[in-house]
Amino acid sequence: MAAAPPTPLATATTATPGVTVKTEKRIAGTSEILVMYPLDVVKTRFQLQVGSGAGEEVYTSVLDCFKKIIKNEGFSRLYRGILPPILVEAPKRAIKFSANEQYSRILKSINGKDKMDQSLSIQAGIAAGCTEAVVIVPFELVKIRLQDKGNAGKYNGTFDAITKIVRHEGPLALFNGLEATVWRHATWNGGYFGSIFSIRKALPKADNKQQQLRNNFIAGAIGGTIGTMLNTPFDVVKTRIQNDSGTVKKYNWTIPAIKTVAQEEG
Image (cartoon, rainbow, N blue to C red; front, side):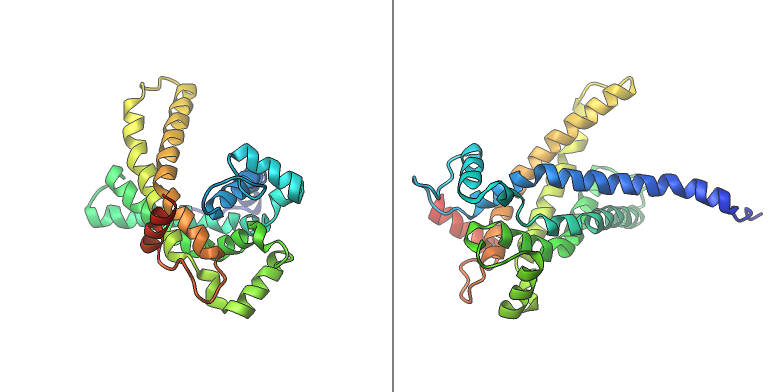
């Protein structure tokens, strides 16, 4: 027999926790961006830096980069371009997790399995990462353009950057670096999900909730580190491709771009 429809009170009661959880996740995601964004700016500056040497424009370390940005450009420059990641945070997370769930169901059905194993988790993670990449590319491109010191006088903000990019380079320019972004997300997810199962098995068995949290933290940290090590070359060329606004581009496709960087810069 079908269950009776919930009363308005029951609906409100059951809906509130879900809404609260979603709100908490959005707040947590935005807070993470606010805290970590200066490091993202520093990362971009290093990825765009070509060659080595000495001088005011060359960054020799993370701390040196922080000091020079604050000294020469002002503290606020560490947050230039933060709007695009904030705008895309909620849809990015929603698409990533819903896509992962959908791909997991499809893969379990195709392979005739009731539960996800390591191989299926890797496949679902890579597919979800590729789906997420398509959504975030325009936001990443605008963010990179605003983070680059060389574009300081070129764009007055997020919407000015979008307008000028579309006007001078065409609307498809917002998707420059799509291939590299797909590579970046696929390798990170593959490295993360490919290692996290093995790491969890290698850790001591958790006997309580605190030990389980410890194991999850350790496995996540190591898995994230492995994923980052694997995807960094793709992230570097993605940044180079997306920041190139010229008509004759030095970097076009991912693998040739990696070869060029390796040959010219080591």
